[in-house]
Length: 249
Image 1 (cartoon, rainbow, N blue to C red):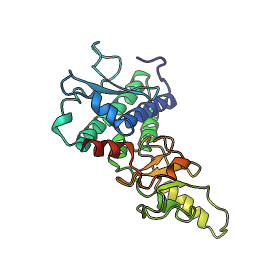
Image 2 (image 1 turned 135 degrees about the vertical axis):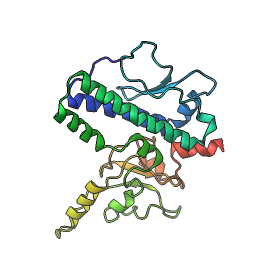
Image 3 (image 1 turned 45 degrees about the vertical axis):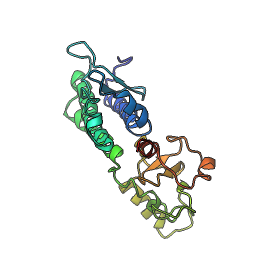
Image 4 (image 1 turned 45 degrees about the horizontal axis):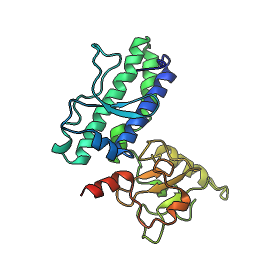
């Protein structure tokens, strides 16, 4: 399955991030496609996050023992017996467990010592879990406007009247104040970073972001294929996950 096997802490962490990004994509921006592929009438299916940041729903590998730890088996069977958000949360929890098992499998295979295992876990622990991203529980997910209320004319409270756009192109910190205000704002960003609801990466001041009016999660424009020009014509933005839920209702 693997083209190159990660052997160092940095390589294992890079592998972890790529697989994690793929799983988050399956459970958020690609949720409708993922939902359709998890047909309860099919055999036991697993959700795989691959090192190239793509995902697939497939049957478990046949070899015993497997080359890598296997994801949760039979995720498709519970799909129609639960609320969709609860089912996605369950898959997310199992995905987090699988990601850790794969990372520390590599660590055990290549003889990571105590310090390397600790460093790997700390690097992983600095990222929100798949469950946190999928459920919106990731720290400060809804507070993007708060971190930049003094830096962008269009950023204010998380919910604004429809006449004001939820899409915000945030400019870098201004240099107007020499009283230490800028340092306080930067410290706030570090302590409570806003995270993209699609890829889970941290908020960056030089990127275009848009907030969903339904779930109030924030997304990179590039992750949900919304440009600043397109956002100007959107009165109420719905993220892919919320749009698919509304369509099914």
